Image 1 (cartoon, rainbow, N blue to C red):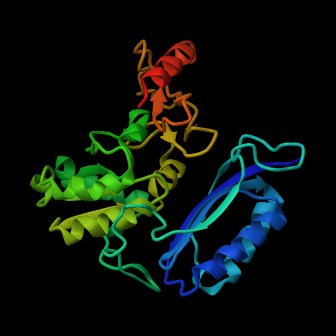
Image 2: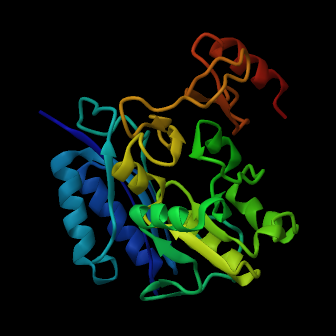
Length: 299
């Protein structure tokens, strides 16, 4: 029986010829029947791909055969399903592109990368080490959400600071605004979906005078795999594919609220207007009314 799987991974490492890596990744995924989104730059690779389990396993083996990606940390999750051709239903197509940044903070000139990864980033904490820090430092520990604000509507760490940003590119101006300067003397733990945004965010914070910056190793995904519903995470994890959200246990707390009626829900939906890129937290009953109305008023 076919088993759909989705992989999330990134590697920060110098890639002198990102176009050659792009062609290799495109041909590899096409040959294995994988779909998803892969971004490549001179600083590394960022990818989410899905397909049938045997094909995904072969992909990981080939990925690790390439010396710069030999130690890649891959996060696995369940896919929704496969179509009649055995292709992932969670992605409409395969997209493999070269970009200035593999995560778009709009600050490629600030990022420094060597063979060991990002230079000058925060101290990495495994999930268990995060709990040790909280046990030791208590309420002084600040959780700092490194995602877009809408993602935190359905799930976030308890008591987290959630910057009011609609895109990752807004983080630089947000940090430079001074509104978080009061945190510069506190232990700040940055977190994001799989860890990549916090690699960059923690380095940006460190260079701006935040003295004690940490980043959650493996992101929310690895933390959820470790502690399920029993840790410091509350709610569901927003994901950028057709699944829309991911739970780590059988009884996740529902913290999202429908934008129309206020009912507790983890359900998110894209605005129905193709020109509107906003994500809406909306229950199933209100979705037709809210999405149509929002599309009508979208810029």
